[in-house]
Length: 261
Image (spheres, rainbow, N blue to C red):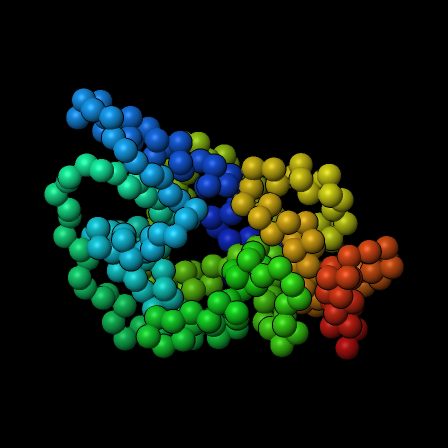
């Protein structure tokens, strides 16, 4: 579902606090509990998307679910809207059975629905076309041929999860202790004028800070270019005349051109 005209969308996981900050302390508490149960110090290493760990593969081998056609880990009861964390320990434990069944069947909704056709056959994701990659990890210019298909996404994308039938069974909202209430809508016309100080203050505890201000403004410019509202053009023209960053300026100018065609 699209947000109303003039509003941007953020992936569900990024609407609250940065999980990189919230989950590790919880895993540290798990270690403390294990040490109290075993009565000995446990050598350990904590990860949550912070190191060279094949998280989804390990989760599948631990029996938590299967890797779907959208390359997400899917749990039969929780869907795919959850985060993973790992603790490597030197304790000999009996492992759980791996999850052995592929429950995607003949469904191809994620493949068919991807706006940029980034999901390929055989559970392969073309990261260079994925909206999440483009709005978060990519640091340079977004390929022009992909911009119109990015719609109003300014950080991440949930399309391949939103269409997945298994997420019908997922809880509507899970907010474990430590995660603040998700913020509201992103008003694109306000965001395009965020100063460095305003950006740092607004997203201090948010995953959105990963894109940095220039990447975020680039994404906002693309979303404005896709909003089908030519009344935003004067504001964009003013911003283009003021902008010193070539990357941001390029995408604002593209937005103006796209709105005035």
